[in-house]
Image (cartoon, rainbow, N blue to C red):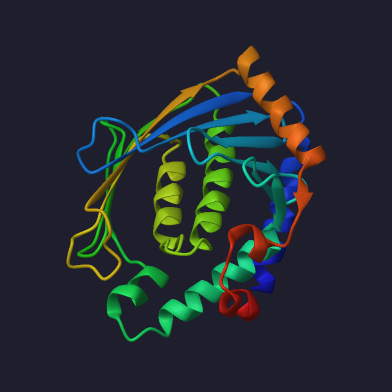
Length: 257
């Protein structure tokens, strides 16, 4: 764990100077369950300099602000008007606990989630990455942005966001999705479409298929500046609470943390 923390800290130190002049961009994401034609969730993610603003649109709403150089995520709930802070070290520690608990499970499907193993294929012409296993499959089509730095910055945020989702009750650990993020980044790609398939026989299978579509625009819009201003206002006015309170963990979970 200490080695992981040092590695992340070193990466942030080296990346910081380049973020000053980094290109701003935005990503619109639609998420679909099964064969649904209408998205079940929509996100707008704005990368401006060294800060990422992620907005869960519709209902419920949530805003996530990632300060890359400071190594922290701020979670904002506009309904309850509360916020909390999660550092990179927090996420590494909580992810390690998730892995240890999954590895200790008697269910082999759950243990797989702690250390997933995939057969990986890549089609360079289609820019398609496929991670296959009997329990979980990812198929992703990528795009190559004009600015190569977009891939690195998006992957960094996506990994952190996967870890955040992993600590929410009812979600699967982040390690499988992080492997997909790594494969895409190795080929210089940002995701354009991702399909996650889980067979119904899997212990953790809730939906047979989840699809996400990502539209990357290599600039931000005036409307994005308004959204950023909205998030900054939340940061100034919302009450700060502990992570367990924000995520509404049961007492037994909060105590274990």
